[in-house]
Image 1 (cartoon, rainbow, N blue to C red):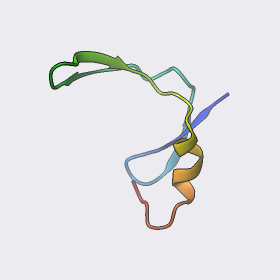
Image 2: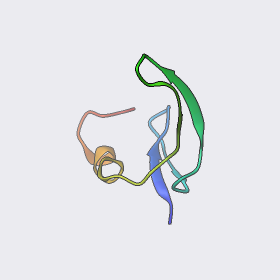
Image 3: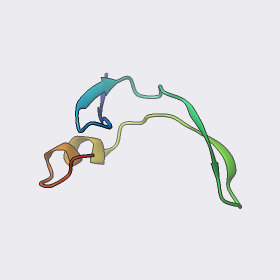
Image 4: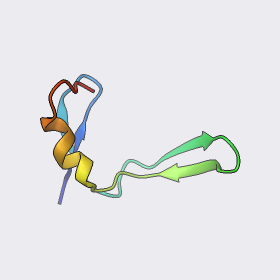
Length: 54
C-alpha cells in the first residue's frame, strides 16, 4: 500500500506508509521527536481541494 504525498512543487508522489523517518525539534514540552509518513484522510482529500498547491 502506498501513501500519496503532495510534494514541494505541487506534484503528487507515492511513498510507502511508515517510511521517511525524520527527526524534528519541537518546542517544550515535546522536544526532539521522530516522525514518519502515515496514511490519513487528508492525504486522500487535500489533493482535490480547490486552491491548494502545496
